[in-house]
Image 1 (cartoon, rainbow over the protein chains, first blue to last red):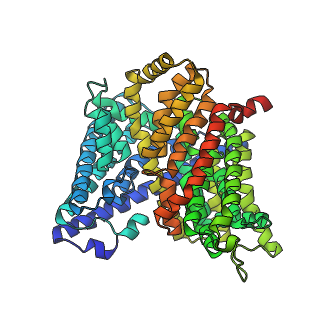
Image 2: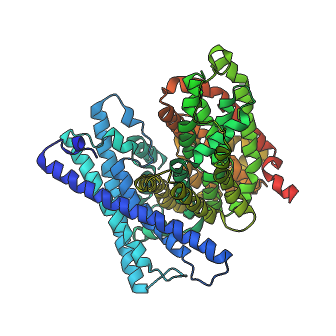
Image 3: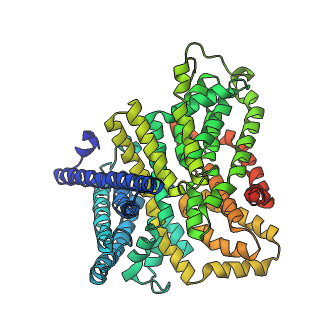
Length: 180
Length: 423
């Protein structure tokens, strides 16, 4: 986000957006680490199998990394506005209509995220109780399920900031940022 | 339910959220337990073939940043310079080569458009035509193996992804040839003066010294590595994606063609694109599961068989429906939803699920060229900085070519099942 975008609107909103920017940095870090893990873990599996080296199946780590990439990455997409959606209303001529639909989309996303936070918490409790793990390296499933409340919580935060931005009449994104 | 879904999509709710929400808001009626919807998503995501999607996207991004895409373009330029209107053919062949590595249509449009679009404009092509050719030839990114939508179809329907990759080889080449034929006919009309303008000086795509020729080897080795590795059984399609990404990363590091921060940006962009696709995969599963629990695919199969005994009529109806779906839905979501929904009916008509997979994917891919949801079109317009209207005008020829190929693939199963006769 460029400074011109962050420095618009009332002080409380600027502080909130600065906090959102930090949340985005965290999400980006998690997603990049996930990609690095899945690339090297899968590459390592190919190497060990073809060189006949005795080694545990580290490919499981790559598979597990799909969960943070999807759930925390989903929150990152909410921040960047890069979710795949039908963008008919975003090109509507009326600014009021665009604002209304943007708020509505954010509210629906919050409702959706609440469902998954609830289900994620249930899953964490369930997996901690049963001790379920992935087969090869024994990655605990509750760790993966914990990304539901984390990712969805971040998604709700971004949606709330988006709603506040619309209500305050402050543009959410700089064009260059969305393109990036 | 369809009404609510359309409303949510129209409002601009992300596709994954919309498909999940219509079920969650009426969970009891769909026999879905709210406690365990997360489990459904988790089960869907912990699926090894899906790992290929972020890895192929990363590979494509690193190829563009590291300069491998540029090398592929140079090679295509050199090989095709004998032909008239060669730069258009270069765009088609380079897109095909890119497709043989990354498996993504939009990635091919963005990478090849950036590299060849300006060269075509310099040579006097109409801007609208450049964008149209870029958007259409981007389809080769998916129609030639490897292919992300075919991975999705294979995983969702439960058929061999390697067989799907083999099957799409001939249709992919058919589309390549068809686009080249269309370009040959159209070139005279879209070039100022009827032929390509000479570009003076030593332009960026020339290959003169032995060193420049030698620099092509790593780029040309990449499709050999990916496809050779898959078909020789050295690695699976998922592993091939990781190998491609590692190879592109290694190349960028060794040749120092991109800085560390640039590579970091590449990872960040790939992460954002991957997350958007994986989000749809993870959360449309709830919708799919609900349909399966209510036996909707079986009902569709029974209904279709009741309407007509003819597989030909069924395929025609499927084509019309999927073309429509492709116009309104994103590729991954459409493949994940329509594949499992229609495949049982196709099997009842005696249609091979591999053949049917190609029909599904080609139809939905053509949707990438047809508004309102036409990702290739928008990316081509963005990358080449061309307004949409002249681009759409020029696209008609390529859409007709696509439909001709689609009919051939649909009604001549041998085009996609050729490998069963050869091997």
